[in-house]
Image 1 (cartoon, one colour):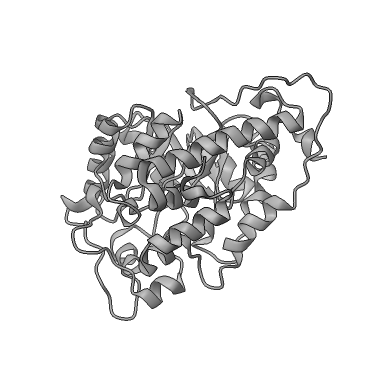
Image 2: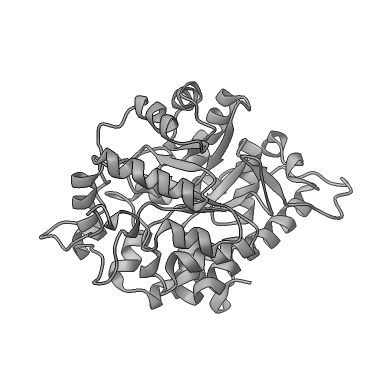
Length: 359
């Protein structure tokens, strides 16, 4: 069950807000500019009706599936989100243990407060590593090598952040990492501090100074040349970009608008997932994030063509309320609710969740 006695994701977020500092809560919860895309991400899923089947004999269900050849207990992975130690002392270690217990993949952010080696050691299940490409290419290549050596099973390249979206709540709070917290994966290379800035978000200043804004498709080829890991391209909303990802050797794509935190006015992911999946035609796996809060949203995403979904903010709310147990509670509840939604939809397996449920 959800931690703290919460009955739904909204109640869990309210409990988390009570426990988090305003700086931490606003960092996790906020979107860019007017937060239109942030709100629309959630609302768009709810507008998709589910045309359930009856008398299908789905008396027992199997929620398991595979992602990039790895068996997972459900088509729900832990999205890459930064700075988990703002939520709880255990930080990313708590998240990794919760994801492993739930039988799914944790995607570790480059901007984690815990090093990739520690996280992979703590996890008993699969870990993927989300990558930002820094101006310092030697440091970036060294980080890729570290992730591979630590046991990460895939690289998730974020491509929608040449600069940070203007998140006004972070500007107001002058977001920065408190003393003792670093971008741990890059601290040895001298890129670990997210410092207090005058009248600005410290993270926005960090991204502008450190990350490479000129990233292009040629850099996917560069990344493939320095690693044996499969590459997942995260942050696209267009079918033509998904096809370009295939042409450049990606093993999967994530339909994502960065949780509404980059370009405000970008389409909700629920509205573009179907066209992207149709364009890809099964040549690579399609994942999606953005506004998914209920198991019925997961069902909708699978029906539109997603192999799995990435769950972000609800994991952070679980961490804030009850650490590892809270994050596990979010994932375990999602699995139970997905089983329930599949039963009510007449689907015995994930493979039976098809587009006709939406027509």
